[in-house]
Image (tube, rainbow, N blue to C red; front, top):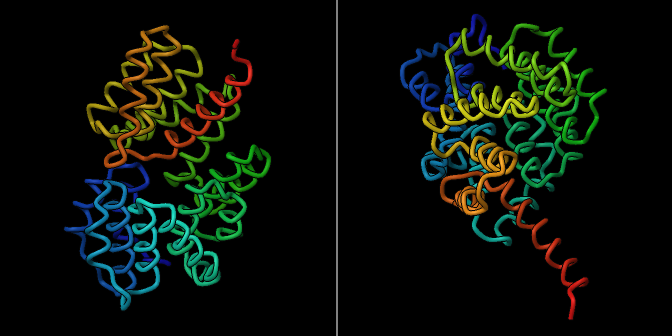
Length: 297
């Protein structure tokens, strides 16, 4: 979709930077001049509500008569709010059987890809996003390729992003992710990308935590801890910051009670993303199962 001069720039940019409330504020005030702009505004607005875990707003306001991109946002809301395996399976079956429908526009593709991301089905993520010319779809593709340890392909996709707009916020963020993956001297480059974005647009939890991650990887733990505290002051439910907090506590040799407190905090299904916690629990169960085989009787 295109909006010409793009009077939705501030709204979109707030979303990309993880500033959900600012995105909602922009959505309430921005003037749209076409139906296409109105639809784009609504897509970003409802996705910001999802990021804040306000699923009922999305589920109650989007219906079967809404345009396809909004129905895709609603499907994502159903997925995120599902509390049973059977309801998740139902949504996945619906998505699997209608994949082509979710490849017709970039926002439907992003919502479908987000569901597959949660399921760690990166093959379907890449299938849904395949060769999209939308820069947000390209950024999601970079993320999927890094999850698959395909740094070479992630760099190629980032090159496509730069050909479209080298200075776009998502192009800069994608480069920061790639540099974090590279490690070594690239970690400081990643830190400075986040710093430049902070200076340009203001600090957000996403940018602060990104810097903290780069510092943790450089063993600069005290500096990282300050940034994590600042992140959590801005958003006490920012999952990635709590994960970094737990990791840092472990690296610094802090008490097991404190580490377990962070783990327990991550188990809060009402407030936090469960991707890391579910993976942690699965590995914990696997470890316990193997450990039992070597117990001394």
